[in-house]
Length: 323
Image 1 (tube, rainbow, N blue to C red):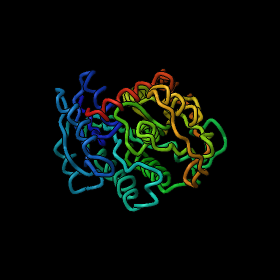
Image 2 (image 1 turned 90 degrees about the vertical axis):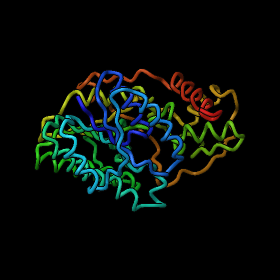
Image 3 (image 1 turned 120 degrees about the horizontal axis):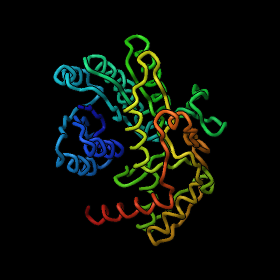
Image 4 (image 1 turned 135 degrees about the horizontal axis):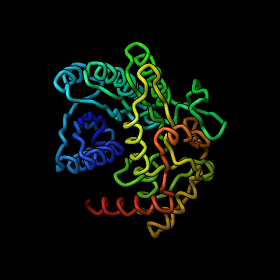
């Protein structure tokens, strides 16, 4: 089976690619290696994949239809697509809003056009986000909850992508599953994400900024658990005209200050904490209802932060010391 995977040099993308290759799939990786964060990290992830049989790479922007649609014609063997490429980062959307609409909305549209041109396509799995739940106070977040009040442009682009996908399922019968990721962390994570920023500040002796005293809660999900869920969903195609959107999280809500405490223990250093009011783009709590994805493919997160955080910390220290 040949799977086209966008965002292959990204955090989740690299891990998903490794898992697919390990079970014998052929993977065509696509990534534009955008310099949103240090490209050396993306290149290092990519190098890990390029040493493995069955992997090929195309450097391309998924929003560039002049590249992606000819690629569809040249790859008729593709039977499944995992679309993870996106412009991430809630706060950066205040700085460069155009990048979010281009990557997350136009990119979704181009990938749907790519998918409907594949003669053997069985399933498209794409990345959405728990951010679509906005300021929802009902917990845990369930797929049936209203998602029409985003509190960031990033969330609005992800919800837009879901709606475009629904229209393509209706119009063209494309089998699709959207996954609303909840605060993914682990080795090879992004420098703009909280675990990396916390670790970097602790090791460097700089203050760690915690909003509202660290009382905000997040459904921290270890990347290995995420990968298991992505592959489980990929192997269970949706009925063409009935697209799915599923939560994929840890089903545990943990205070950020507790996450920092576990990270302190793993790094062997104490953090200097600075308390700051919560910004308008941040919600108070995220908490995933995962009953739907469990029913579909038996998804069961197995990694508590007491296990996952030390694994991230060990990798982070190794990367910091030179890879």
